Length: 112
Length: 429
Image 1 (cartoon, rainbow over the protein chains, first blue to last red):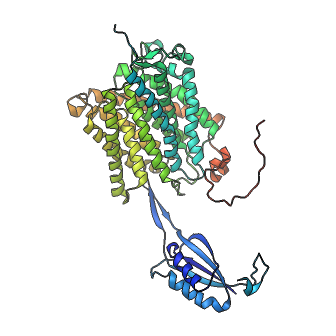
Image 2 (cartoon, rainbow over the protein chains, first blue to last red; image 1 turned 60 degrees about the horizontal axis):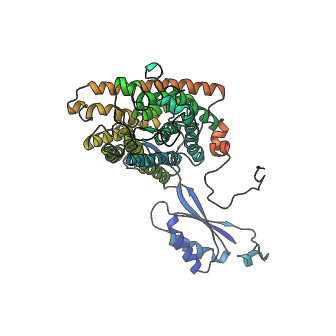
């Protein structure tokens, strides 16, 4: 089992979500995030005082998948999230030792 | 002598104007409240509401008498506190001042006192003890506003026999309070910012306005209320009130354009905060002049104020005083612009209208006297409060946020994830 974590442009979330759902992946966690990579922040001006805002708003998408589905899920995410410009985000995987569905107590792949 | 009778038209307009100027208090609270960070918005708004509460009570007790009572010794410096103590003899439905009930005039002028004090609070955002602010508000109204308003607003033979020196002896023109309200509050704001010192992180940490829509709404309410402030200062429902109203719109719109133009050229962007600030700068500048100039004069005053006020907001960083919400740049500079410009564009009296330099000199003396008295008196009052009860909250409280530290409240609950449990229900009987 793997945890896929994707940092995405907020307006791309719907496309990524739809692509994953169409492929039968029906669970995910989404949170608002901010950060920076190669894409830098912007400046704001208030009564002539300029502030730089380093952090860019992003969404953080987390999906638990079985090992067999990892490659196809990654491909779907990257394809749906891409605009070709700086700031499209990153996707990475981490190995997951155990998953338990709280309601039923099912474990492992059954809980995904 | 012709008998003075109540005029229903004047009375109706002054009743409405009193309501309008009262709306300026929440207007100012929103204008200032939106400009501070999310952790101090309630304190910012409370300083306006608190000022209204304490100053109006003092107004009824002795403030009105200090402003409109007969000048002590005929010197034009302060009214006789004993003459109308607790509105003695005036708080009934039959006494008249001018052509309106005395009680209406008293209520209208009382809100002026409260607004002037509330304006000062913008210079000490995020860091003043609420109790110390309330003490300051009461003392400042007593020792600074009431005497200065007597100088400027108490005309001979209007309420009492002899009035203030600026209105009568000097003859400087100040229709609705460019000196008594705006220069007065602006100079006091500067003094208080110096006494309290800079906020932690001033100039290093971004201190961005937490809600610009609140600032815009506040500016709009101020503008609406200002019709009562300026046109109501005619104390009559007549052409003077109409001229003041038109000029109030003209100057304000010109100031918005001017402020935005400065921003576009200097910073590259026309901002909503700039538009809201331009509104207030224009309103401030036209306040003393709204009945002394024609429509084009009002446009000139608004435009000059928009440019100069927009250029003045950077001074605090240059000189290192933390006038947090630019009371100096907007009210002191705007008040000076409006008061002095009467000497240039005033109908008949202005230099550009063939009036020579006489009025200009009078205007400068009036502005300078109020500025100097307010600045020095505020430094002394502020210092004494700071040395006795302390004016600033602790560094920890300031970092954590004054709303929670001082008022035990938070402005916004934007999620439903709050943790905790009830410690006690109402402590009332």
